[in-house]
Length: 252
Image (cartoon, rainbow, N blue to C red; front, side, top):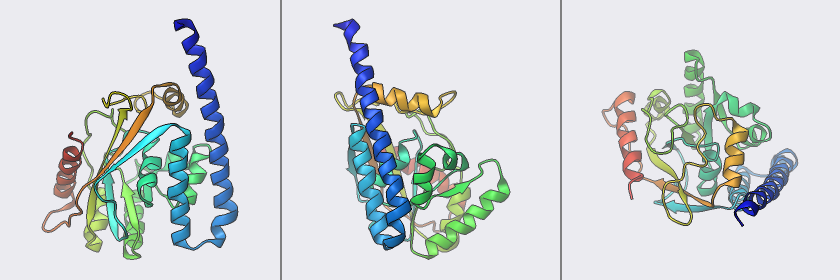
């Protein structure tokens, strides 16, 4: 039995991958041909429904804790673990993401992210960070829900990296509330923290995807905290406090 398990697992993973590609292509067609005829609210709902359906195809459960924002302007600040994070948050609530520029070039994922309204940032460019902050401020003034990963890169899924305050400046400039969001992936059977979807270090995107497809069933847990205003805090102090809020949301 033990020797048969690996081939069967591979076959199931290949079947999942085929369905993922099909669902992604369907999403691409929706963006290219249907989105131009839809109102913004209709597009937003399509993104949320598609994201939930993609999690189902991946056989990933979803647990939402707390209250997602019903409308903007609000800036969501979340920890970053995996290539799944954007998909998971979109399954809980539609928002516009600020993501690293590399995502734009990921096969299919980049096109889907762009169609969903993602803003891209060159992580190593201070000038580009200023450009993105201005775009974020304009988006918040227009009443959007934005989401950022202030760690700047993915963590190991166990601990949090320091939160950078650069992108929080847009919320300070526009007097917009920020809502902390905690992401976790757990083993569906035991409830223990699952590291399978992590995307860190020397991992490639394909390696992380394949590991997720062949691993045990997981549940994505999204915890929404209470929105807060900056008050007298500068962006650095606020980022530290937001990190503490996210850490607290991750506790059992």
